[in-house]
Every structure is written in structure tokens, then in C-alpha cells.
Image (tube, rainbow, N blue to C red; front, side, top):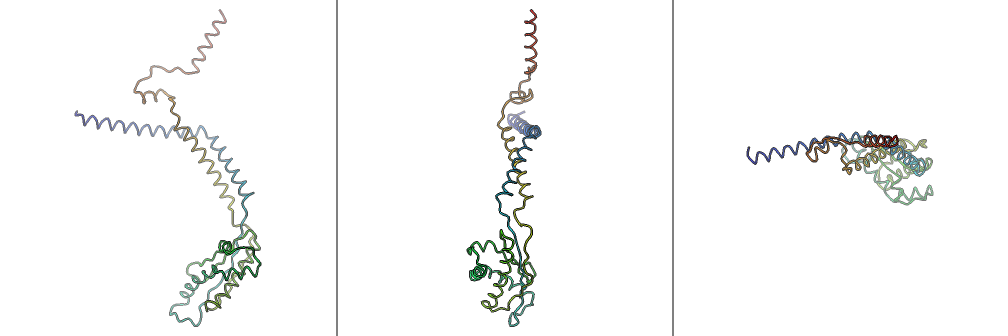
Length: 254
């Protein structure tokens, strides 16, 4: 066999040995995880408890209330399209009305709100479901009654603003908002599950790092793989202790 052939054989052997070592390491890591299952469960429970305390004690519940507008097409419109298509275009235009500072100012004056325009932009969300002429005006607030009143007031002010400023037929209030009973956030179940998963990941990561950094030789097979030398015998700590204890007993008898 030529030298190049020998080199190829050696390379293949090394690759096979590395693959076998990797498989064994993954198996040993899995076994180590099973041995440390109680630490994983403990970490998961602790993180779940921390997330639960944070969710129930430090997160302010938020409530959402939605008012709906029905967009009608102006009779004087010169656009040669179907009413549905025109209504869809108008609905998309009307969503911009709710970012106008004039609308925010009117709502603030009517309800005597302590919010800024930036805060109101974050609290109000306007959506238009596809292929409909209905606008959903959703207000998020820590106070459920405030969320309902703000949603209805925004709907009323927006209708007046559209009729005056945009020279369009005033939309109709399709549905008034209701006082929400249940908070929309936080999602307590999701947060608790998230805390549990975070605890599992943290414990698994710590165990993995400890496993990788542990370079101690534990079995005769590891000696044979690393040094290529066969082991003639193994002396365990338990056997040494028994041997020493038997000698001590003999000396006492003498």
C-alpha cells in the first residue's frame, strides 16, 4: 500500500473515531441529564415561581374595548367602482384619522384625560378586516371603564372629523364598545409556562457546561481511547477501603 493510501486510511479511522466519540458523548450527556433530573425540576419550579410573582404582583392588567364604525360611500363620489371597493379604500384612509392630533385633542378635552398624544397613539389601535367596510377601534387601558368610554368617544369624534375635514359622508356607528370583564394581558398561563421552560433551559445549560468542562477519566474504555493502551486491572475505592479495613482487623487481633 502506498503512503497516500495509508494516509487516507488513517484519516478515515480518525473521522470514524471522532464520530463514535461524539455519539458516546451525546449518550453520556443524556444520561447525565437523567441523573440530574431533580435539579432540572427544581430550577423549573423556581423560575415558574419567580415568573408567577412578577406576573401577579408587578404587571398591571390591561383591558381592551372595541367600538366599530361602518364606512358608507358618498353619493356624490365620482369614482367608477363598486360600493364595496370604494368602501374598502375609504376604510384604509380613515385609519389615518386616528393618528391625527386634532382627534386626540378633542378626545382629551371631552374626557379630561391625562395622556399625551404619544401615549394615546399607543393605547388606540384601528384595524380594518379584509374585504369589509368596518373599522375596529380598540382602546387598551388599565381601567376597563376608561377603555370603553375612550373607544366610543374616538368613534364619535372620528365620524365628525371625517364629515368635516375629508368631505365624506359620515360613517355610522356600527357597534358601541362594551366594558371588558377579563383583562387582555398579561397572559398568566403563558407566562407561567415560559418561566417553567426557562428554568429547564437554564438547568440543562449548566449541566451541559459542567459535562463538557469535566475532563476526568472515569472508565477503562476512556483510557484505551485516549492512550491506545489496554488496561490490566482496575482498583476501585471501595475495594481499597475493604482491603485496608481487613488489615486493620488483623492487626487488632494480633
